Image (cartoon, rainbow, N blue to C red):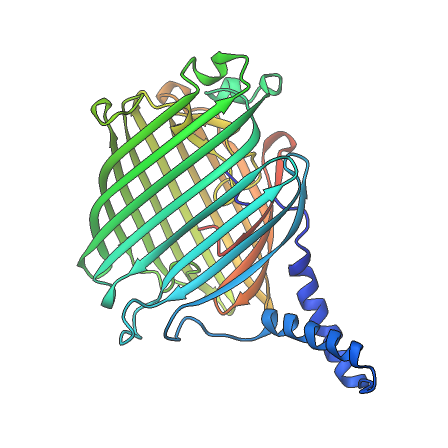
Length: 388
């Protein structure tokens, strides 16, 4: 699902323009007798300085957070406003060699009654001996569902409105076993409810309110130079989560997940990034825990959740190129497949797109992505930090 599906982010556009306007005003001079104009200029300068100062929060001690946001419009969520905060901190003040911990706070509200709030991050203990990864989110979303399985989801006539409420939490606690290698237990919890559904076959004839409790194991191999915006290194995540009936789950199933990413600097200012992602659900997963194709990080361009089934495989390659000062671009191509079993693994969905990058803080990019899928499907995305 998209964190924000944005058509215009005025603050991002206004900040660089305001910077040039401020410099022009300084060159032309100001009238010291106009105290009102002076106050206004002072306020504008404060805003401009906030967006243009070159803070290196990656090497500083303490907790450093930056916020950015703005209004947006989308045909589904209508007029809204979103806010994203990105923070860096170090658990041990004496450890200045390891990369810092990170946290992202995000919220969004819209006139369609869409509401979202969440927090995710990675806490790295002293000398990166332990890691705590977490993601907590809540959203209320007037949305659509096309069903489960490619044949249902690819049929435009199956589009049906629904109201989706969701609360979810995921936690990993990992120990470092060797250089770059981490392992440990995981836990998850999810509550989901769908309203206003008339065709129950689109939900697999399952109950509309479901709970999922899971416990599992995680194995990570991570040599990235920075988790949120890697220039080089490799990241491999392998996770298995068990959701048995005796834990109170409405539907019993097991989830196996793999994410493999590699990053390489190919020339000055250019980073080539690649990702392979797979998720397999064995047993009887609920409609809310099915593998979903689309969103703000993978298969950008598809409506998040339109294509859903038990299993998914996606792959993408992205070129990230610094262009000038704080500005950069990104180009990507990819593809994906949702399927029920090996016999239904035959519908490969294409994906490609282009994005603008603005370095809000050192190695913290605001991204505006426009992605394309099959049959004219497309999405506009505003987010912070790279997609993967």
